[in-house]
Length: 343
Image 1 (cartoon, one colour):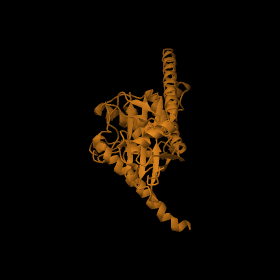
Image 2 (cartoon, rainbow, N blue to C red):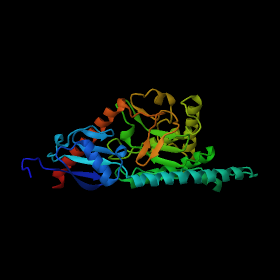
Image 3 (spheres, rainbow, N blue to C red):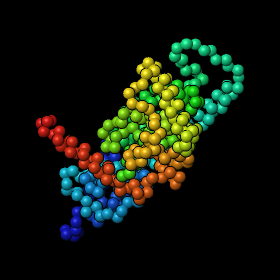
Image 4 (cartoon, rainbow, N blue to C red):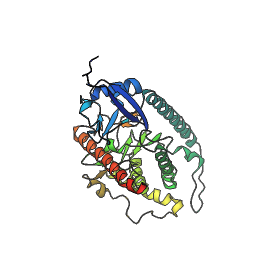
């Protein structure tokens, strides 16, 4: 044995709050590390994302051949966090998504037959409760991102949107039946130029909303997210941001506001609701979406953008890395500031 040979590298990878120690040869690269992760944790390399703090930040496929011994391994702040989902979980999700689609189609077919029968509507004063037939006009499945912190809170947030009286009333009126409502990963949809707030795929097959703050340390304002949801529901009818789309968006917002019987049908805020010019002129800030998407590949841990609507090109990669790195550093700074008060 050569006593001059560098020691092996023992790296701790944190995945879903659980540490995993991997041993690699001293000359190993970042690509070697991702290969070992794929072999031991059964997470395909294309599905892996590594947050390396404090530097170089977020890394994703295709991974660079960076030597691991060049990383700040001795730094007390050094940490590698793995974001990704095992193959078996992805396959299970695809199966569940297909089952949800089939059941939604069956319900839609049954409802179409029911609507062909005469069904006189009885009009009464006051607030109307939704009929039993309107139970199909909802979000049939809620999906938080399991690899982000506190997915249980995201599930509660999605359920609150689904059960919002105003949202339920508007969806029943327009007969919107959406198989899946999920959250988006802020990092996946943030560039230096813009932040996407919501997406609608295949005119209502999947609606994706930005629930969390960019640093994953909290949740955005409920009323703002509900406003975005009204926008995405309008994409179930119109794909382009034309005048018909904006008129429908405004109509849905008024219906959601009026149907919110928990608040007496009054506005929840003193601010105006959708003003299309506000969104159309805010391209350097937040954008709701890039219009109604067609296609797209659904994978656990997010909805992978396809060629019809990708914004994950070279223009946005560096921006996302910088944003996530700054967010990680800010969290560490806050934790360090709290330490004296805990002693």
